[in-house]
Length: 265
Image (cartoon, rainbow, N blue to C red; front, side):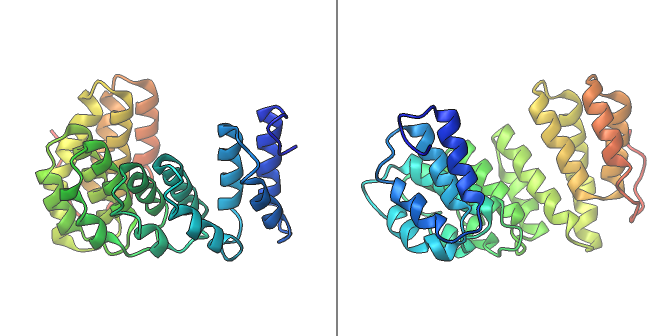
């Protein structure tokens, strides 16, 4: 079924089904299809299946493919994102592509690292913020940095203050929230409550974009401070969106008070 002359629904499903099989003999079968398949949708499914295979079986292939000048940056980016999502490839391999000249490759590397909660490439990623002129790429950097264990709350506080693009600033604050959720430092949490929580509350209630409202809501939930819990309760009462009110109510119940916080006006 993994052929160009089969419907893409069937051929893509066959590729993904093969990728899920434990038999190591499946990997060379899938690798043998790479040079045969021309259809873009089927190639995507094929690479998705390969990205989910044990990396020791595909390392040589991906190492050569990702460094080939004949492969487009867009395809390399998709592969890097897939390798990050499936958790098999070393995070260090993904980090090696965040300085690639092609922004599609860098984006894929950022997306891959955003799925790696055990990695420690936060400092390297924070160094990329000033290098990325496109706000959409900075958003990806923030998402990747938030997943890294070595990204510090004080660093993200400074970065969030400096970000001028509204959407990127929201992602920077969400990353800051992720670092706050991992720390017990009273001063770090106090600073977040004072600076970020009121702004995120305003975004959740007043931003006209439902997706941005939800991103602000997620940030408040990730921080897990008492002030962010109170903000979620306020959203549950005042949001014009029924779905957002229900989500905020559910999230607020998961936050246990840890530090005193004044009522939100």
